[in-house]
Length: 308
Image (cartoon, rainbow, N blue to C red):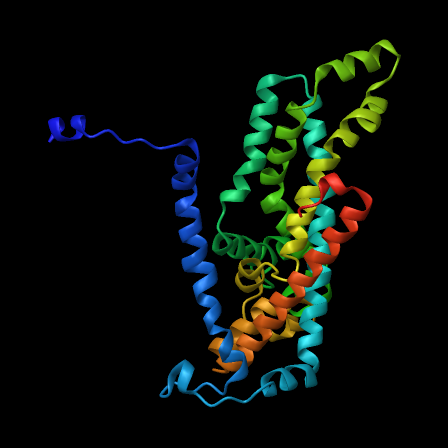
């Protein structure tokens, strides 16, 4: 066998090798992203399990008419957009701020330990996060209410208070993803030429001036690219976060229900695949229009930083 392979000479050009390397990614997107798009036809059908997808009767845009006639779709769309805008803005500010702070730390070991500790929550599953949140805010046994009672205060029923979850969800989203985002900006900071800072020190610049006139402007391309990718999924929401932490608590739907959880309930609880698919298609179209619009604005202002 060894003599057989030793006699076979394989000649590949650089282009062919590159295509072979990217082939698994191409197959992945074809199988898991493009082939399932055939299921979009469910949005225009009254799905029947006995007849299947293609034999179920066509209903035109009736599923969309039902969705738009109910106020629920507008409410979950508003929640999805506002939550994701908050996620993007808070993440951008905190990740850049923490990355700059870590880069300025003098202690090598302290810097590494701090970065590792910050990165650990990224590996915590949303199931464990939901258990953590429940044990913190449970009305009878939660840590927060036990502390309030020990201070002589009245306990707070967090799971019946929709307003407070607007802040809790943003906080826990940032707590979980901060370390991962910081790594991206730390990598960008290491690429900044130290000669810029040396020249600034010679000119008498202090640390704040170095950050304001060198660090942040040179981080701007990374900030724009990361934000553009985040905007591309702004309509996707964070299904794992909302579903695991909130679950099926209908008392909180007014401020915590997003398109993803709404579609999931349509597909599982009400057994309406047609309307669920229609809502998903509506979500995808809005995401596409949003990323194209934001990319167009970026291209008008900074053409070098646009995605296409």
